[in-house]
Image 1 (cartoon, rainbow, N blue to C red):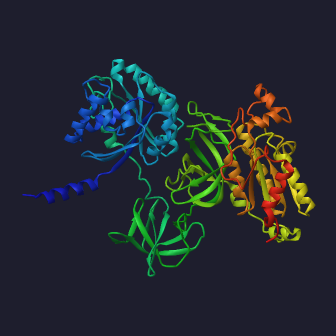
Image 2: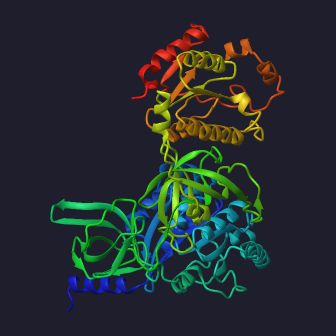
Image 3: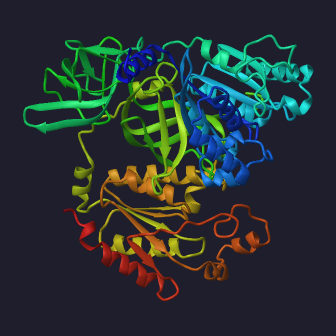
Length: 629
């Protein structure tokens, strides 16, 4: 008679032989996503007795079905979710039937949590898109479907739920299915299978329901058990993003990470994507011993036959099929933040293993999720999807997302708060990234500064309109000129008569205004000049962008800290009066925000001191900084 250990071993072997399907549930708020997964687990008898007892207790406390079980509570694990009756976080569950193993991601439907839906979709093979039969296809239904297609999902179950509330009406189901299929025809899905459901009562969840005799298709579980999903990556070219360098002692140097595509064996040739240096695989090391081969999805440490320079952020790849290496690219971007994306701003672009400063140089268009039309846009709102060009501070190694999910995705991080602002899917490198190269100059910045007997600097004056920026900067330039310094002053109003005459005063235009001025200031500093920049420059992000363009210690931020009441009292150009009367839109401090510097090199009080005295104080502060070191 077989013992328990033999039974367990037999069970584990049987599980290993089963295929795995990763899927997510998505759609609009209160379409029944959590209820559907809870019912699926309950009807397949995959809920333990203690879980059932907890569900019974929670249904009495938080449930919405009277005395009946509320299956949504199986998935809504956060207290806030239970209290509000919505899904906030992504809830993952593993379960298995006799035919297949599953990992399901129950994702939120509320627009505010679109980022969590994208997280769940990023690893899924199939999407179960739920629709409330009473409400039909909604904007969020379309948005989630479009994001699913962007993230590489090629199979969809259209779960038309709550049919019990429309008396299981066939025409309602068919009308919704036809409308959705017409919309999704351009999204590139390989299969769309509409299924009529009542998740609450289990109709067509694991078996076909007597309440829908007109429906001849599979139940939800039958379809999930039989749908054919193509392999996820073992047939792709070899990709190994390096997570870390392992050096426990002088005799061992390996590179740890997870195979992101293809396979590799001991003795195979490999190349470092960024440097092009080649070697061969000497060992494939795991905690359980060496392997002869590693495939997509396996976490291993690779030891090379040669000592080549590699670090986190680089990638080992197949020599005959290499990824792109570029610092400019086009990508589809899903924006998560409440503040819109504005071209010209600087972010941190983070891939699976790399992180680099980047700027969104152009927003080519926004995708209308209802019509899939490409709408012209100057900014991308929260939950918007757009196509952007990005310029990176240094090259990264990547594939197009459609070729490899793992090496073709990225997120954008806020440089100050470290918050995730958006998720991107790379389309391709920009050709100019390969054709435009820096021209080496015989005469460099040091030589230009040396002949002037000074050290280049960018003195960046920021403050409200009327604060006294230009007055102080002008006085300072006269002092420096008298000392024989080589200077140039860039003033906000003057620059708008020429270089930036095409820009208005929207937030997007202001970002571009500062980006252009920062680029000019950088060129002038490269010429060895002391550059005085007098601009309101209301946003921290753009001032940080300007600082990052300059060399260490070259950027001096000077905050002319004058209260808005004093600026309005002075009102040298009559602008505040017009702004308060509503005649000027987007006026800083009144109808548009000003973000004061947190740690400027200098803070000036124009009420307590005169402009000439403040100019002398700046000159004294600079002191030896302006001398050639």
